[in-house]
Amino acid sequence: MGRPEDSDFGLEFLLPFNGREHIFEGGFWVKFEIKNVSATKERPHGLAYSFTLHASDGTRLLGFDNAHGVPPAGAKFSKRAACL
Image 1 (cartoon, rainbow, N blue to C red):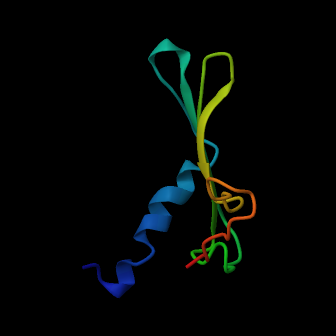
Image 2 (image 1 turned 30 degrees about the vertical axis):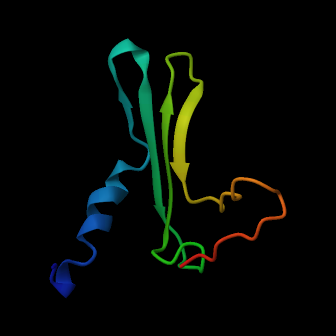
């Protein structure tokens, strides 16, 4: 278990990655966007982030972010899970 004074170590490590792009064999590349924002119910940790994988032609292949909630699979009238 971490010490309270070390609680922001993860943020100190992640924030410098904002704007970085890493290129891999075959021309694939990963882009990082990580910013401090005001804490909200949707972003209780106070971070806005986006991690994306792109093909060599720039096509976005995969992405993870906290821009919005993802609708549940199935019927469009299904109840969404509450954010914790």
